[in-house]
Image (cartoon, rainbow, N blue to C red):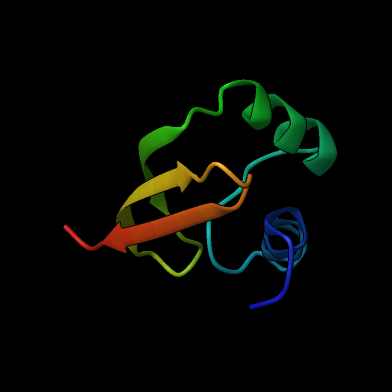
Length: 72
């Protein structure tokens, strides 16, 4: 809590923990993802620990992101 999404994801990528991010250049990967961002965005992801999640991310009118996940 209190950290930016980009910082959390950068740490996950750097230490191969949490969400699996397969990118040689984290910043380029993150910026590319922003191009495909939508107000409501369901997606699937897996983790370096072998788990799989269905995630829904919503962007609120103030620009904040809210995410929820379920394990199928």
